[in-house]
Length: 468
Image (cartoon, rainbow, N blue to C red):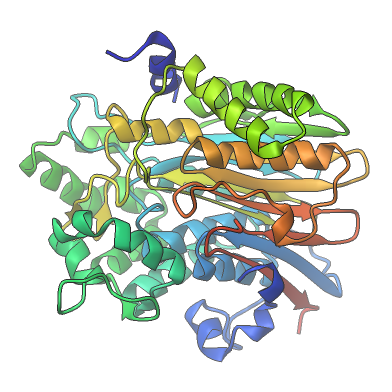
């Protein structure tokens, strides 16, 4: 029987730094794949006036996703466009942790400095069951509609292209495939995509594809969120889960909603920090951990000891004992040339979610949040912090309490006046690639992407010239 504190976590409404690339270095093939060939308009913008040079930066656990984010920024997209493009690419290239069947939390800081939170965690169906009702597609659609500058089709199409035409398995995905191979072997769709002829996980660099997912993303590109939550895709999901003893019905999918509101803010040294609000388990846990981490760092000169002690104290406060090694989560962020920042953390509540692919749709549904994997929701920690000197820190910890701790440690370090300028300045989680932290650190002149030093992620910069 879970403790009352643990239950609260469920019940709360719920290229490396040295190798950063400009988008011009990604090559003609990649540019064409992402919809950036010379015959594609590159001047979408909210403003009628184009600047001579616009730049931005994106960071993610999976390099192809980071490249897609940078491509959106290079096309005069906003940070919200970039993280949306990254999510849809992750659904193809990193489905162990990011997928259409899951949910998450995003924060967006607009150019006025206001930070808005979008909560779209996967929820348990009304009638219970093994599978969760997905929230991610509707969440990213709502965020991109409000804060995006590019057409919706432009941010969905990179993921669609990778799913339909194929992509090379990254080192990031390969590392998690090797640990999740027993899950992969139990599902025909996953096995066909990620196991070789000998039944072993495909090696990094080998190509694979998911044609049904490409079709599903095509429906989302054409019809928006309705292409997923209504019509043929929704009917297939409902039919499959019913046949498998699940209960994700058409009514569950149609009733999916996004909670939106002001993020929780608090002063931290010279910074103001925004975190998920108290209506989510993530908000409750991150607030507890930030308090404990601040106290422990004040009492100990050893950041490792302080961080470990703070994590143990917060876990104990919520009655959390043992945790699964892989909660199926990932985090990513972007900052655009106009100063908009967006950070997101998403989860499937386990590697590849419930470990079953919906036939004809290519989607892995998240595991129900009422199971052990549901604790993943408590450790989704998108964060945005701004300093009095125009400094900005945007990123996310995900995958477990260590990811949350690493993200909050970065905030406290920056708030204390430390410059976070190279990848090694970011404290690793010690549990990568399952728990990771990815951050973007900006001063008044430039931004740098800091991917988790223990993982295989990427930070990619983008520059776009004036309209041609």
